[in-house]
Image (tube, rainbow, N blue to C red; front, side, top):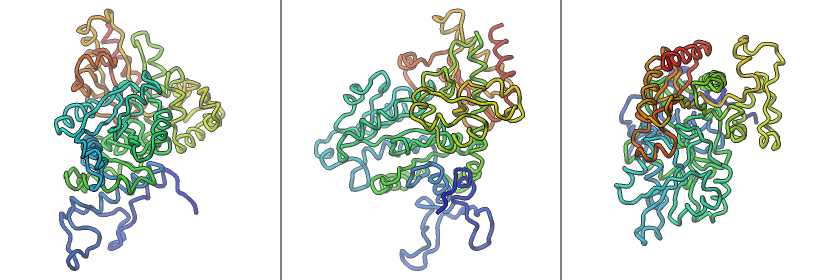
Length: 473
């Protein structure tokens, strides 16, 4: 039987014509409650907090896009999805959670082992909010620095979730996913923590962590999947074969906490996801060229973009690429054969061959990206140079001048929309992290995070350069 590809699923999954009207686009069901034929007999819906047709449609769509999934559960925000995953670690097994009778008898807390470079909202919830509930403790680890022995030592008897972002926010680190997965699968199944990967920065277009060893994928749907900066929503996606273990608990928390997305938001997110492949590729092509240009600018102390060949995470980026992304890159002229061979992945060998003379009809784009690497989402982190790197006030002044001088990049939090955004994690998205920890991670006043949109790349490059000219005048 033929299996449809990513873009086909994005258009058709969860979007069957309305059976009552034959409308091609499903109607928005705003009803809060549903008539029952008799007590407990209904058409699958009772009350919209427990289930809604538009939410079901979106969850079906998302599950089809995140390859290797069994089920997707939508929440009112990425933070609500974060909270549900954390609460699952503390939920009793008879409610579908991770807390065993032994855990309850011992009276101890459940434990989450999280990567140390993580979105500020995730840190805030795990380190502060969840801690106050009394049943959860979290610790934060640099997985690369710890190595295999350190990771094993950090996993406790009561560890329920190993939590990573890939790439991380805002430093764009790709953690050693395969090593972490191998370590977890060496633990007996009854005691094995689940591996949760926040895939927000890449989206299902660029990477499918469930095929790489993850058990659960977390998304802030507000970002690339919706793609238009007009929806707040999150989701948890469960790997095929784990539905029985995880679905009941995640659904129980979705219904009990009431952290559900509205029908209209589900409709908007479904509409946005239909063009995810088109948008994601454009985001990545723009970002790759911008990262390449900035890496040669003396006013930029460091460029972090895993898709650049010069990135220390390039080999992991190549290894993480989804089948759909590789297919599309092949059509655009990249030599993807190296991506299919282990040696190619280890050596990071991926070349762009100019078979067609011009790349997408844009000579500037071709010249900028040739042999530079691969598109790998639209997220770039840059560190601005400073006359005195030890003077945070001087760094802040340069950063502020740069950000406020941008014309096309809006100074705003969030990411993944069609428009370009820029922000300073030091005072914005990661302000909830204690200062000492921010500095240890490399989050200082000179750091800027760019969310590259789908505008013309030449205009975006010019905008960055004129802002740099003003900031360093």
